[in-house]
Amino acid sequence: MGLQSKHKVDSAFSMSSMTDIIFLLLIFFMLTSSFITPSGLPVNLPSSESSDIVMQEITVTVTKDLKFSVNDKVVSREQVKTELSNLLKDKKGQVVLHIDKEVPVEHLVEIGGIAAGLEANVTIATKPYK
Image 1 (cartoon, rainbow, N blue to C red):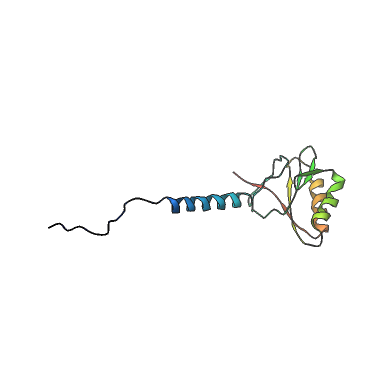
Image 2 (cartoon, rainbow, N blue to C red):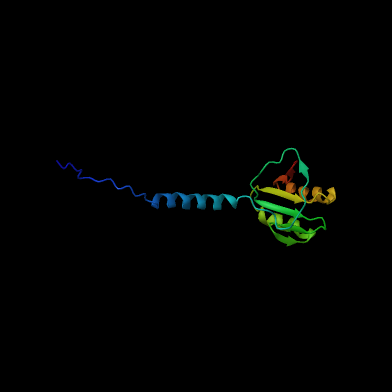
């Protein structure tokens, strides 16, 4: 007596759903990796016990040879206030200071004072202790 099933189960594995998941994960990681952007000029940040990650809307970088940049645009010391005021027009923003640890404190205070005078929240970028 030949009993055979009319419905055969196909044991092949479809890769289309797997490729969709991999593609979505790739897009997710590409988008989230762009949220943490390094500053344009290389600086040796000071260390601190607590190093919080904040969303960087506007970055001001000062290198040890006193080169200034605002959002990766190299500017002179006198142009920092103008650039910050243009970027902070009619809004209260977040300014992250990337200041090399060898820069005299007077420059940190000057740039922080300019940003605070424009009613921005000022944060100093640091690296955690190792």
